[in-house]
Amino acid sequence: MPKSRIMLDVLKGEAVFPPPLWMMRQAGRYLPEYRETRRRAGSFLDLCYDPDLAVEVTLQPIERFGFDASILFSDILVVPHALGRDVRFEEGRGPLLAPITAPEILALESKVFHVNLEPVYETVRRLRVKLPDETTLIGFCGAPWTVATYMIAGHGTPDQAPARLFAYREPVAFQHLLKVLADHSAAYLIRQIEAGADVVQIFDSWSGVLDDASFDLFCVQPVAEIVRQVRAVYPDVPIIGFPKGAGARYQTYRRKTGVTGLGIDWTVPLEAAKELQHSGAVQGNLDPLRLVAGGKALSDGVEAILKALGDGPLIFNLGHGITPETPIAHVEAMVKQVRSATR
Ligand code: CP3
Figure (cartoon, rainbow, N blue to C red):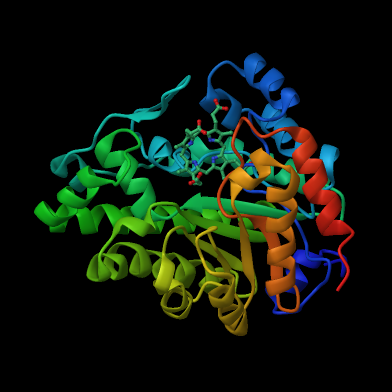
């Protein structure tokens, strides 16, 4: 492994300054070249399952901005899709799934899970060959709770009320769903690592809507199970957990799941993030809307993060995905500010 993949040094607990830098959703609609490839692909899932095109869009932000890490282009919802569920993405409406019922959950199985995901593994293999040596390649999956919320409601919701209600009313079926998702997600990550991913990230975008007991049962335990299964095969591959909105529970989340790095959203106080650095790397946490606004809002936000967290293990990132309306010039300004920072 070349010493120059600095994100891996940071995940080992080293403080590197200026810190390594990438953006969640860095391949996406804010880039004209993405919109162009996306038009050629047809549907969003066609793009995810076409290695030629998926490699192309994964590399676009690397070629443009020279980020330290590249994240595989795919979506967290390919897992339910590969399990045989109906998943579609409609322009302007986000994901649409056939809402799953308790009997369907108990019958969930797929003998062709990895066959269905083979194009994703092929994308990872090609990426590792094409990427610059110093660029870290990140594989990913959704956390079982977050994926389950879309499977149950059939679409995005502001507070995941359908999934929470289902979990309370149908505890047996719901636990089974989390278990099926944890097992398949772990197997999926293992294949991505086999194909060349250096790091894997688990996106738990909806962990902020749960009470204490549910957070432990629905978020912490399934992610701990994924970490256990991945480590049994690849003990040294870093795993980043991103429990968005976990607030006061971030520390417990790292301790109980065993994730190496913690993705932190923009609401995490920088003082608290500094504390989190005592137990390992943190990744984040610029408010994506500062990047939309640009100017002083952006430079102040970047500076505050570098000042508070630059002495510890930090991967500079946004606190959530970049939004389509973000001007490219603002991304360039952010990259320049982080790269030219001095302590
Ligand atoms: O970060 C990257 O560049 C890698 C690609 C990536 C996508 N989705 C591509 C995508 C990753 C890591 C994801 C993760 C993902 N997908 C999450 C977790 C992170 C988060 O944002 O909270 C979630 C919840 C999803 C599910 C999902 N996919 C939603 C809710 C949407 C619709 C919202 C939107 O922005 O349109 C998607 C679609 C999607 N996934 C797009 C992209 C680039 C946009 C669709 C398009 O181009 O037509």
